[in-house]
Length: 122
Image 1 (tube, rainbow, N blue to C red):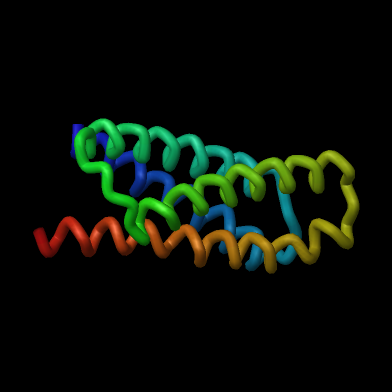
Image 2 (tube, rainbow, N blue to C red):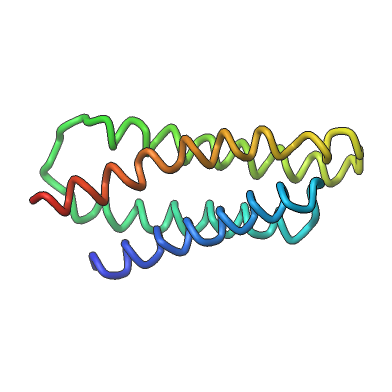
């Protein structure tokens, strides 16, 4: 189960990074960016669910846990907001959306790397 959890969380990193940097480079939000954001969210949620099954009995609240939950919530808000922006077809909102994307992506990296490093030193 650990393999699949890591696999899905790594897919989340790939999808989310492609979406965020694709949008940043193209300087506007496009439907494929939205698809990448939703795919990243789904993969992260699936991977996190598998990780939580592995952590049964470990009831500690850590920086990783708090930032991980915050990151999933932010990814959901981000994907919903991207959906709204694309549906409205507002060019000003599309052009400035990448700033929000970059912030969410950077926050998402905190639990990604804290989890990775925490398990490397065990």
